[in-house]
Image 1: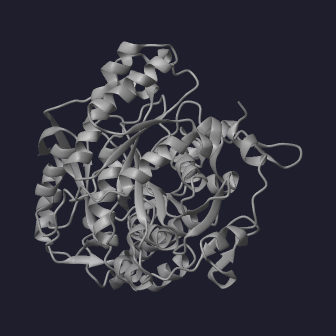
Image 2: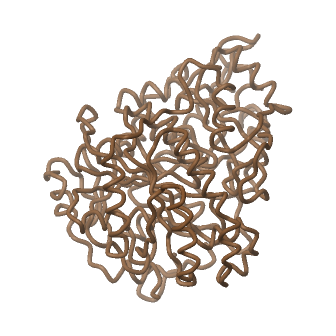
Length: 553
């Protein structure tokens, strides 16, 4: 089969004005970036009347699951069967593109285009987030050096810098070295831009003024003598941050290979951030089309939970159904089959891996959402292996279909599309978030851990105990939680595959994201600045003799 890049280049994109017109956007409502992408002007007060479909997945493995591929194929399939549909996806980060994962614009004949732009610099949104975040860091250090009139206790000035790359050498750094002219020496570090609180704020903001309010509420430190929290608005920097984020606040309009309109906006990871695209993009899509297909990163325990517990209440929306992506290959890994053997037939391996999928289906049931399973087919899957998954879903009363979108585009997902329309049109179940407002963050964390992870208990260890006391002292203990956890397991141990039960969730620290509106418990050994694999994706990228990109996947 042809590479993703070759397939993407084989399609001539339709003029972006034509794509905009499909959903009723006129020339005055878009700001073109060339011929094939545009910023759209959003009315935040417009009603979000359409039905929303959340695409999530079983616990991912290196064998692949393919949420974006299924999301794009599903949208194209729904358009093929006569539904008015729009995609609302996240923007890829350069970190994974140049590191371990590669591109994130879908795959095969189920892609959004322009694939090269989307996977690299796109419209500059991630760079704007990086600049706004680092401006606040610079202003904080400037304040500390110039008399510190707010009397910030330097040990509490924990606002790190960010970079949209994976660079393990920057996880822990010393800043202000080299004498008084270079600032006040202190320990700091870098996170990846996708984990920035500014990225989270961009994704959670409902309009311009909400963005301003949230940026102003960022906690950058604490006044000396265990005084109150010091916030970004006290550093007189919010206005400049708003200027840097002015264009980034507008969703980006692109298209699929088959011409289905897609909004791509926001780029957080679900293992270390909230893992969903922006509220503005999702609500805009729901106001422009009868059906909106969106996705949440990694497994349902991560992006799915955060979508339901954080984004939906803030946005005033709820999904009509969930599409749970599974693959035979991933099931084999969870069933104990070595990664090197997942392309070989193993009926027992598939059966043994089913408990992982079932755990996520149980979580869907717990929050009152109908679910459809999409079995994303790989070329090495046998009919017998696929049938095992379909039969297991039938035994639970869960509709399921094989998706062949990767090889066939929208045509290969039409059966899935019909099941989604049927499930999403039913009003039989009632969605109920697990996290409840006005309740202790620890109580919400325990409910998330038991409902979505299968944990028996939650334990605060080391720094987390001190963090929790500080959070209580600052009066922030009623914020919801956005858990940072390994995506490789339902537990905090990436080696625990399948469906670990009655395990303990270990929280080693808790970060405050008051502007975004939540706390971030850091669990297990997860890090918010990834490193690169032994052979980074950057080693495959180059320009050919005609100036064309090669090696992007």
